[in-house]
Length: 229
Image (cartoon, rainbow, N blue to C red; front, side):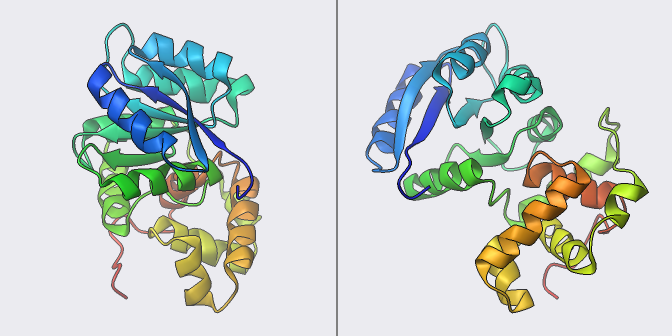
């Protein structure tokens, strides 16, 4: 992503918030805002017409809310490369759970610091990060406690993983970044990322969000891991 601009679509019903985000994002040399949507329907249409890499999506919007917009974007095969970064008032709430089911790749709070938002856009664009360990643990615990239409991975999908890929998938589910996984396993970050990508491919996960859910649903990781070990 070093020499490539990441194209960002802003979806929020408040023009003032969009304007603030636009100024911030356009100030980064590697990011550019390619469109603004005030409704969920506009977000879906602009995702198709602008070919954005990342949609920064608010949850509460008129016409079509951010959850349904996320679902439509993530279910569209023509938009397979588009990532959705959900902006929510709370780090973990019922809307975030629904957004994960809809296919969102990342989550940030509306009170996020400027640099954290830019970092979130970059990491979601590359598929390298999902949530902090604390948020991952709470989110997945809640996720598994509720009924879901998401089909759990089959045993065959996880049995296809090598021992190292299973180890990496476990660490991803615990909320570790590629750099942290590399440090834990004494490998390079590139090697860690390669193992993560191979695990996602074998399990049929669109991104790290789905790999995390699959790891918990399959029983590879328990719903309440001790992240301090």
